[in-house]
Image (cartoon, rainbow, N blue to C red; front, side, top):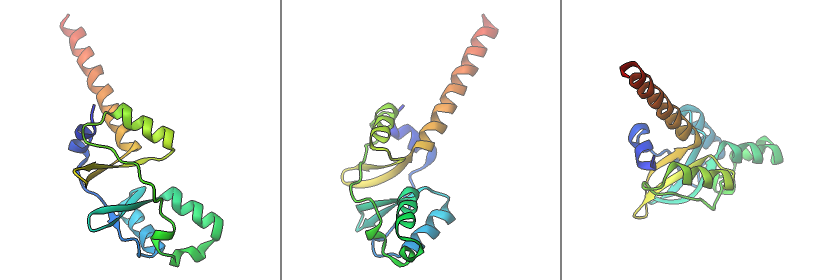
Length: 142
């Protein structure tokens, strides 16, 4: 299973926000779009990523006053990426080792998608269901 296969099912939409947007605006985007992270981008280049974990961390540390801060002061700046040809196993390892749940997909210096651990789990469950169905069909015809 590759990242390309997951994106083929999930879609290629990337939700992003600008670095100078207020944190409260970014939280609104996360909530309205039902996502756990947004890319912080400028001119099609990744400047950072803002996840729910980043929001909780800064709110816990500084309180509600951070809602007026720009996203650039809260986002994770060091963004790990993957490619469409990468395997699910390799990106799961990256996510586990890095302790993050979202991974931008980059090809030729352009963002082409965003994969979450939830996307991988969903794909894996469907894969197992297909295997079980194939085994049932095989047993029926044996």
